Length: 432
Ligand code: 9WN
View 1 (cartoon, helix red, strand yellow):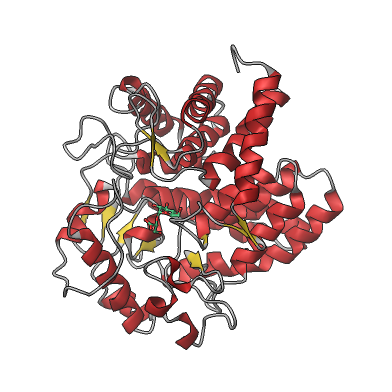
View 2: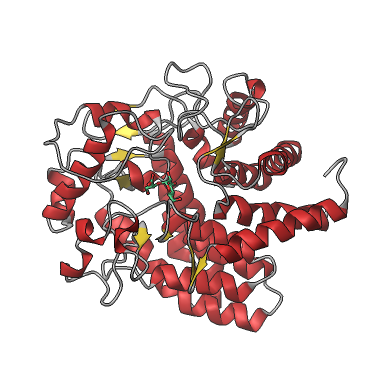
């Protein structure tokens, strides 16, 4: 990075490793000390991506620990609970009751929701960077059937709109929980108030949304986590462009991994093409991909960082890529933010520089957009995103998210994916 020496980079790398080591709990890395004491789904994929640059085994262990929570349906839960810490987070195991479900794994307590399916991309990342090819090949063979089961689950049980995309059934499934995209579908619910113990976190959701989060989770649980209930009755069903863009990229990663596992890559390529066609047909809104609320039958009017997710697809038509890049680089996003990429477009009335997913910049979405720039050969954009992200963590530490105007840190400190993806970005600095 301009103006920084290799020594600075090495020191930052050491700090990142010490955060990841401190956040290790057995085979898993928890997102942050205190607030998030269990293993989270997409957090662990980012951890695996970051550590795979120099520790293939740790990347594999991280993913295998998460996938120990995979349900027999193929669903990979959004939280795998640490034993003995049941009360450390709400909603905990006593809310999800996974132990009562015949498809849940035995001996591991999990939530009943999922999160963006970045896992195959993370395994491909690990394979691509592994020095010990035999160790990595063995890991790919072990993980491959679990990844296929995960993708089969999404295709069979989450295509609630019948158009070839996976629907999320709770804002937590997006990973961008408090995004303004969910405001309209959440406000349309008339939840029965629930008693719950979680204190609202500073900068966390708007009043009222907590009740709706819990109510939605309980409705799904009380259906027996039933796929037919999701299709026919569940009141929250949204086709999210980031979730589906990630799914598409993971299908392409599975196609790369399939031959290593002695399998046919063809079905994964076909799945990627189906998802691309569905994204273009169902979610393209003229300027970007917008989320489709299946229950209201309309596209969200809000443009957020999630709207760029389908750019992860190298096969996205060039005119759409050009349009997306012009929006991303405009004053709506990067152009007016000193520390991009804001999680919501700055001109939106819902934009809030401090509240989770409603304005702050995040290391993980910066990393995903940087990866999207790389797959389209947009070297300048990729460099800028990498450099801005490193500037954020150098200035404010491995925070959960950052004010997009002054770069000050928000949320948890010592946040695992901020540390892990820093390692990945630093590795590219060295390789350049
Ligand atoms: C609910 C763990 C998770 C991340 C999400 C982030 C936040 C949880 C919460 O923390 O969500 O899953 O309690 O708000 O929004 O992206 O995976 O870091």
